[in-house]
Image (cartoon, rainbow, N blue to C red; front, side, top):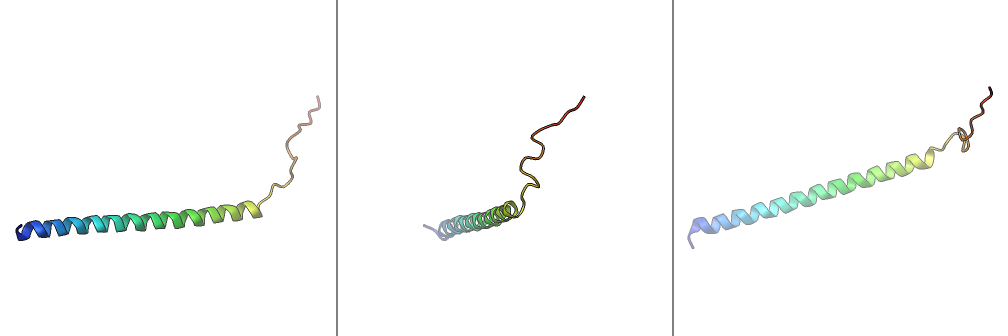
Length: 63
């Protein structure tokens, strides 16, 4: 093997390692964002309730 083929293999391995590292980092960021979004949604659901549970279920029409 000559020197350029060894360096080419090392560069290829480095590119693959960096690519996998970036993928893992983006997955971790997306997971953290999803957890924050779900927590915010749960907090909003717990604090917000309907003004009246039966409001609007019956319509009173008089002709």
